[in-house]
Length: 442
Image 1 (cartoon, rainbow, N blue to C red):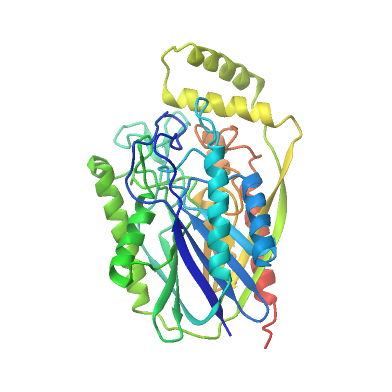
Image 2 (image 1 turned 135 degrees about the horizontal axis):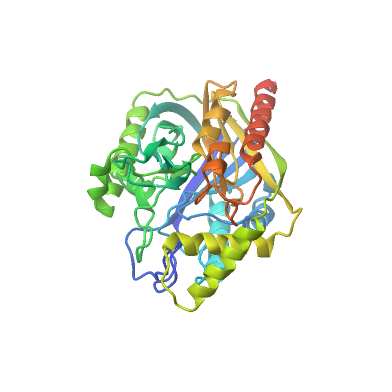
């Protein structure tokens, strides 16, 4: 028998604290809409799984590990059956060291850990029988943002009307997955939906916001129930943005219009799927995880010297481009934290709910890798989820590494050798096929 628990709570930070951004130093002056953690616990006779989706940019490994260990102790779950993912909103607290002048908000993280333990204990303590439905559709909320130029360079965003523009570097993925959970009496109890984009409408702003995933959640609650837990899991969005680079007219949208448009698109597709799916009270539930060790890249001596010179000028207050200061900080931080020969181990998961399998990893994978994982999956429906179980930055394709620029060259949050994404695809595929061959236990 399938059982579940679900819930949500607010995880706002205090006004006056820094907001996550690489190129801006802004403190929050208001809460535009609540940041939330939404949780879904699923279990049957053989498998238990706790999924938590946070309206945050990302959470690094050390925090995730401590949080999972605490939750496991208090819920009696295996810590590897707890997956904490982030939506990657750029309207949340400063939790990543991407800005030289903004410290990571450790006080907030301690409060967050307590809140996530509280939420987990609540959703796990009294699981109830349920039925589940799964749907797959499409919603175009994400577009490739890596622009290629005649001189061989690639940039994040750009004026595609210029004659030097030679095309976009990679593909897009508009797949939209949704999982619906309802009580035995037929009342809807929780939604998990997944799509691929970068929630950056409030990047560089001075307000806290859950961005378009929060807007979609609000629309769904207006239609289906004000206390409905709604989890959003983001896809392989490393080179994907909210803006269609080929349609510059949309750049005239305000932040608020953009969030409303994309939130409506996603919520509408989730609602359409809800009206088309069939619920089942007996589905195969399975979960496996594994680890992958990757080699860390090093900036060249020339690039490191440039970074140090740039940061010296920046610290003296000399004017410079925002991208120069971002990359210089990233190069310097990479050199500071990872000596030559460094390696890191990352966690990957695959969990099955009936015909759907979800593969998770802790990267901002470039979109092509997500498509590759799906194309190699034996399951009828496959979703790829990033920023889960930690944060290990961008994983560019070889095209991205050749084109360089932000998210293409080695910095702290693009820190692996160019083979990393391909190895992630191989490991994810291995996990999916292991799940596929697992027997159904009656």
